[in-house]
Length: 194
Image (cartoon, rainbow, N blue to C red):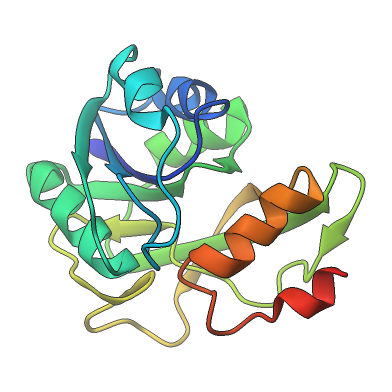
């Protein structure tokens, strides 16, 4: 199976190299789409593009107003793959889970897996496994809203691997910036952080 990786990135200067590196031994192609500004247009990127250029990945740099637009743009560079890991600039897998994934026989449009989401530090897990996002897609998939895809099965198969999502870790200011600028900005009130 030819396996690609698509990473959407913004303000990930400190983590982007590690995110890319975890995939290098199992991926046939890695594409990183770095947005110049947040999806809400209120923040500018700070060095992610330059850091990503120092890796083995193909790096795209533009401004996308919606998350699904950024994903679809990156997917165009991965159509020659069989399947694509849908990654963020803050998601990690163990080496053994990635090796296991590379050997799996996949046939469906998309798959999910167990996701552990962390808050502030690596000790606090929030909403563990409540909503299972798309983690692997066939390379012909089209995104229509955030991480949702056209023709999406409402009950996709869950792969026996775990994704560690560090989306809400870091300083209070970093978390506040994310709440006010990312695709979930309309869904989450910054008040809950206080």
